[in-house]
Image (cartoon, rainbow, N blue to C red; front, side):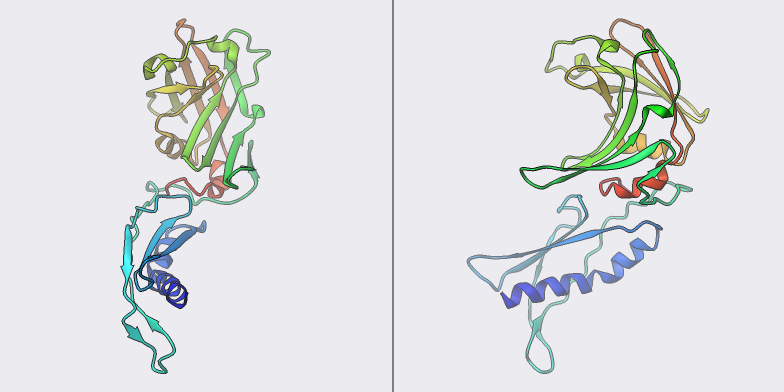
Length: 255
C-alpha cells in the first residue's frame, strides 16, 4: 500500500512542469487524471497512466515506476518519472475557452448516468438562436443544436424534426443513414460533408465533430443546409455567438 501512495505522488510531482506549461497556453483550466497501477502478484511493480480528463489513457502510454531511491531519513522510497503529453493547441487566433453556464443562446447542462455515474456535459444552442428557416413547415418546427461530451467522446448535432426526413429503414450501409450537409460560417467558404442520421431521422450528427466545432468557435453566424433523400433542401441560419464562453465546460473538446 505504501508503494501505491508513493507512486501516485511521484507521478503528480514529476508531471507538474509539463502540465503547468500546457495550462499556460490557455486561459481555461485543463484537468489531468493520474491512474496508478500495482501488480496483484508483485507489489513492487508499479505503473502510471496519465490523460487529459475524459481522454484516452493511451495518450501518453503507461509507464513503469521503479522505487529505487530513498529519502535521507530512510522513511520513504521513490522513483522519478517524466511524461510528455501530446500537445493539442487550438488553431491560431482561437479564443480562450470559458466555463460560463450560459452565453448568447448557448447553455450548459449535465446528465448523470444512474448506472455507472458517468457524466454527459451538453452545450445547447436553443431555438431562440434561429435567425431563419427555409423548409416546408417552418412555422411549426423548432430546431436547435447541441455539442456534448460523454464517455464516447465529442459529438455535435443539429436537431431538425422527424417530419423533415421522414422514416427511414435502418441499414448497415452508412450512406443510407446519412445526408449531405453543407455549412458556411460568417460568409466563409462552404464546407460539405455527409452527416449521420439519428435512428428516427430527427437529427444529423457531424462525422468530424472536432473539426466542425473548431470551425464555428468564436464565430457569429452558421448557415446549415441538409439535402434529404427526397431532394428538398432545408436551410437553417443560426446565431452561434457565445460558444467560446461555455465550451470550456466540455472536457473532451481537444484544445
